[in-house]
Image (tube, rainbow, N blue to C red; front, side, top):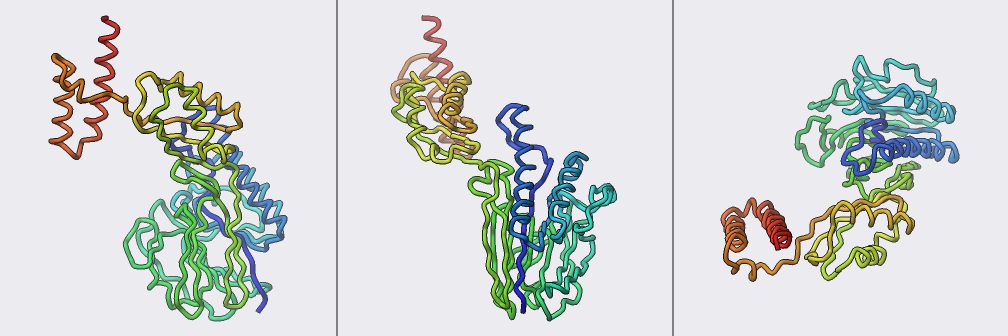
Length: 379
């Protein structure tokens, strides 16, 4: 049987408002353009490799936010690959409602949008059948069994959903191994989970079930390389190539700064860390450990650090301060007056309410810092 190859992607979320953004509004606009650029790179990859199929498994265009300008951009990109069959399965972030952009706009002839009921798309030239469906609203709590699936040729299931080995329940078209174990499916092209994840069934076709992951990071949990999946099927063999595609990565680091006394020393410490190796992305540097009392990590200092890192080749760097001032608590606990009483009270709350210990510990250090600063000013 002739071999088959296709690109599988999902969860681009074009025009979704950026979550957890730490830069300026202007930088946020730039970030939105980077999401477009990543989609353009996907199209370029398909074009350059003459891939006959592009499957997009939902959460492609953010419902209620996607602009007409973005639609025109997407449409023009699809026209570049007019010889590629594009199939889109709407997800919970781009459901096929009456006000969906999938229904309100005219799409190129090579683009097919899966309806809210299972439907079969046959491609005889490639001996391929694609069975797809889309969300009708923002949630789909019930599994719907696909129609009769042919036992001949290559069969692909295209959907947005929540797969688990055993049934767990979900609002996002949940299904499990038992639901598809006996179906004559070679590959299940999924969307919804933003981390590339793959399963394989022990059935007659050794069905491969795959989430390609989001091709561009959408928040600080999605760190590192992002990719699309280039799938090749030949007979009973399914091979997966993860193709790095992101425009920029999100990188998150935890840095212990104990013993560092100046912001210059902290800058050198960062430059000597692994953060320097991946300087082309967005960096979130979380500082922890005991902070020397002479080292200030106020807004000015963090802005200075970010500016210096930009000069050193970083694209963007942001800081989160989890450090604790390096106070000698035993010394201050024994002091007469307000300071000693405050330390003792906070430590008592930490012991008596372990579930709130982080809150009271933070209050202890911030309060002690404020009390000591007030004493210095009065002196």
